[in-house]
Image (tube, rainbow over all chains, first blue to last red; front, top):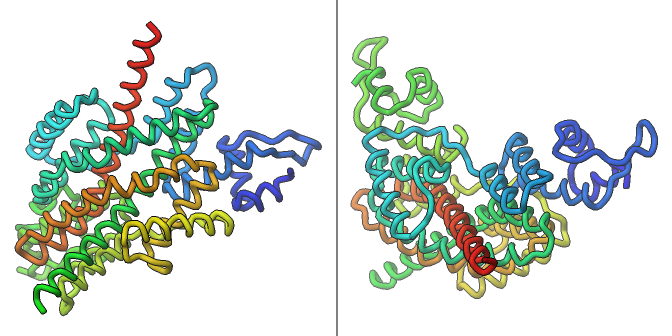
Length: 215
Length: 215
């Protein structure tokens, strides 16, 4: 298909597609004349993925490029590429909590990881992000939220097992890697929206009960 | 305290504090001379909250202002203010999925909400975001992830109940509202990091088992 059709079917404007081509996010089409290229279903698939990561997952173009180049790495095993994808989607936090809060948070995180039997330790990007988030909660006097750390872990652990089982059951390596990317980023959006809906519903039920007791 | 001490204790540079003051994110200090103002613990608390929302929660200055003005709304009940806070932290999605995917996603979301006995319906911002996220997953051929919709809801529902119980147990209205803001935004970061750790651990365990079977 020509670039105009690629634009219609992907919902990405032609100038944006040209920008992605220049930036190497989308592989070049097959030249049919010096000024014309043909694109196929793989280009369409890639554009839909980029659009989802940028518009729903709120990734920057630089982050999206890192993620895509991890999927595309030739000569790496599926396990290596999956690890690269996971690192590419791990956010670097700008926040730096105070030393005191960090010390307290580090101990809480170490205990949690030990209780769970997880392999993460100091120096791992996810460990560092978790310590910063917990330290920030401590600085904001949210000890009652920090006290729910195991409840948060209880919520995600069985879900993570099921997500992984669904994605490794796929047949093709590229579909597995796309699943890791999309599952991580869009699954996070899904979980966040459902959590907010659950909050609103729990809150509404609590109010109804209060009203009933009061009447 | 003077602005220099406020800066040291909050970790926010003086020019940034001045910017927040101009933008109305932080209430003015008490003028002690035409060029000097005094600040107190409430200013410090507010700056720490802003820093957490911007640096950890990745909120824009405009979003942060909306959230803070919802907390501060005078003459509103706690319930009204809590609703305003929740709306202020609900993201507007730039993404627009195709009509076909939206129709399929709407049906899935309607069934989920009915099964859960939730009050959300078409037109509610969270409903609309959920439909867009599910439609995007469908467009990316992630039906096996969409099939886990109930597992996602199962993960967050009991957690949301506990979070709500912890926060409404607080004594002061402002602490409850700060808890809604911080719990929603930073709780989301917490859940996201723990989910990624759980993925990595589930993945590592699956590999070990494969290695053991293969040896």
